[in-house]
Length: 468
Image (cartoon, rainbow, N blue to C red; front, side, top):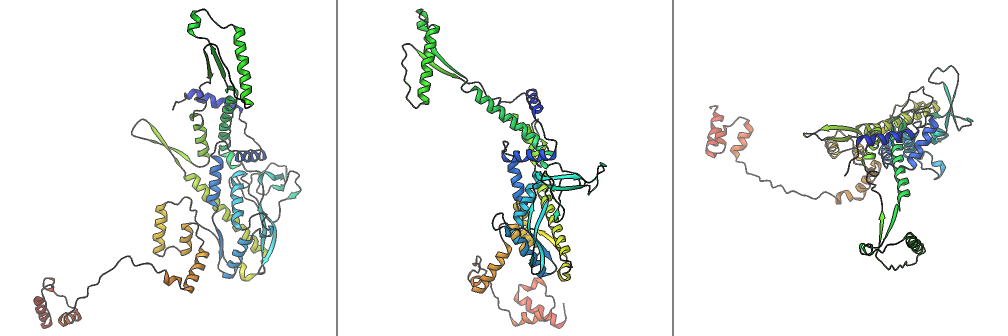
C-alpha cells in the first residue's frame, strides 16, 4: 500500500478544516449530532453508540425490607407506560434505553412523569418519558449573570408555554449543575469535528468520481504502414468518426446493438487518472483514531524491539462510560422512588422501608476468565443463584425458579438425574479380632510392625503388658 507524504496530508486536513463549521449553540449542536447519527459516513460513531446503549440496557429492580412493598414496586416497573396500549414499549427497560440514547445525543436527559396510578393503594408513576433535549429551552430567572443551581426555568418548545416544573427529574451527566445547557457528549469529545473531516473527504471523492468518469475516450485511426505511404486522416475525417461513435453510444443507451465497420486500422482507449492517492486509507486514519479516542478507545503506543511502533486501543474509558451510564440511571430511579415515598407519606407501613436499586451485571465486557471465577464463587456459596443466572446472560431467574418448581412437582427432577460418569470400586478388608482390640486401645503401634501379622500381634501383647 502506498503512503502519503505527511506534509501533504497535513495540508489537506488544514484545507478541509477551514471549511468545517462546528455549531456553537446548544440546540444547533444537538441537531448536528442527530444528523450525524442518521447518516454516519464513518461507520464508527453510530455503531459504537448503539453498542454502548445495548450494553447498558441491563435489568433494573428495586428491593426493600418489606416483601409486600417489593412486590408492588416490581409490578410497577413491569407496567410503566402500559397505558399507551402498544404505542410505545412498556416496562422499565425501554425507558432506560431512551435515557441512554438521549444521554449521548443531547446529554440532557429530562424525565417527565405524565400520570400517576394506584397499585394496592400505593400511588406510582404510570406514564413516564424522556424529553427530547433539542426541544428544551431555558429562561433566566434574573439578569445578574450570576450562576446558581436554580437560576433557570425550563420549558418544552421554543414558545416556552409548557413549563417543566412538577413531576420532572433533570439529569446532567456531562456538565455542571449550574450550567444553563450542557455541551453534547459527541461535541465535547471532538467526535463531531473528526466525523465532519471524514464526511468532507468522502464528499470530495464522490465529486471527483462524478467529474472524471468518463475522463477521456480516445479513438486512434490509421497505422504506421499508412503513415509511410503518406496516407493520413484529415480533421474533417476524424470529426466524422467522432460523430459516428456518438451515434453508436446513443444506440447502446437505447438498447440497440451497435455496429461499425472501419476501412483502416482503428483503436479505442479509455484514459482514467490514478485515484489511489485520493482513496488511500491514510487519509482517514487520523480522523478515525480521533473518533475512537473521543468515544473512549485510547490509542496506546508501545515500543517494540525494532524501530517500528505499534499501537493498541485500550477500551477502558469506553467501558467505564457504559458502567457510569448504568449508575446514572440507577440514581434516576432512586429519585423516582423518593417521589413515590413523598407522594405516599401516609403509608407508614411501606414508606419507612429501606430500599436499594439493583441492576444486573453488564455482560458485554465479561471475559471467560471472569465468568469462570464467578462460577467458582457460586460453587463456594459466595454468590446467589440469581446473580449467577444474571452473569450467564439471557437467563431469567424468576423463570428458572418457576421451572424448577414444576420439575420437582411433576417428577422430572428425578427422571433427569445426572448420569453416572465414573465407577468407584471399594475393597473391604476383613479385620481380625486382635486388630479391633488394638483399635479400641487407641495406643500407637510401631509402623515397622504393622505390615507383619506376627510382629503386629507381638506388639499388641507388649502394649497390653505396658512394655515398649
